[in-house]
Image (cartoon, rainbow, N blue to C red; front, side, top):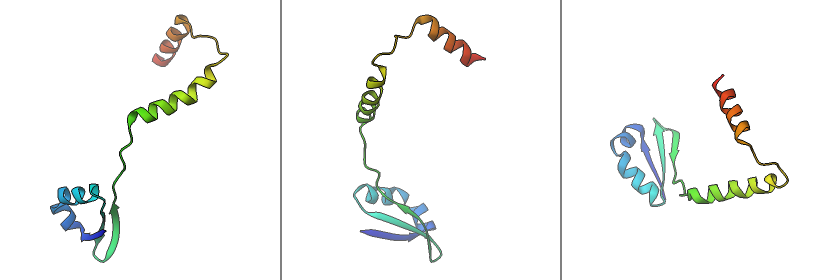
Length: 82
């Protein structure tokens, strides 16, 4: 369901509107008669899924690479300080 309201109404009832958005409604906010913004729910994404995807992309690239030495890590740290 789409809920329509003016800017002043959104300011006065933001918490209520966010609860409705979380429940699946969409909120369109207008300035005068012109729509200027839309509030929609952002689906929750588990942080773990992003981490797992990053690891899956990195691991194949690591095969055949030499391990990083402590000296290389120190050089990178010093380079970042310059």
